[in-house]
Length: 54
Image (cartoon, rainbow, N blue to C red; front, side):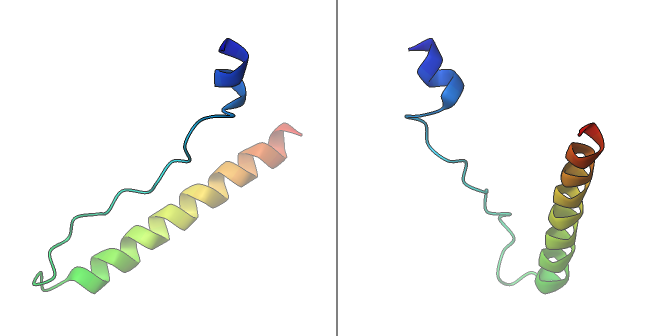
């Protein structure tokens, strides 16, 4: 069972949380764009760190 947990064979994939921005918020689109930019930057940094390790 410990091996299965380590390999995450029976686990669920992580689902991104909804940012919970109300539809009537005046700057919703700007905030969503900024959120997406932060996510892509974080992913790029992780990939860069992985490349540096190798």
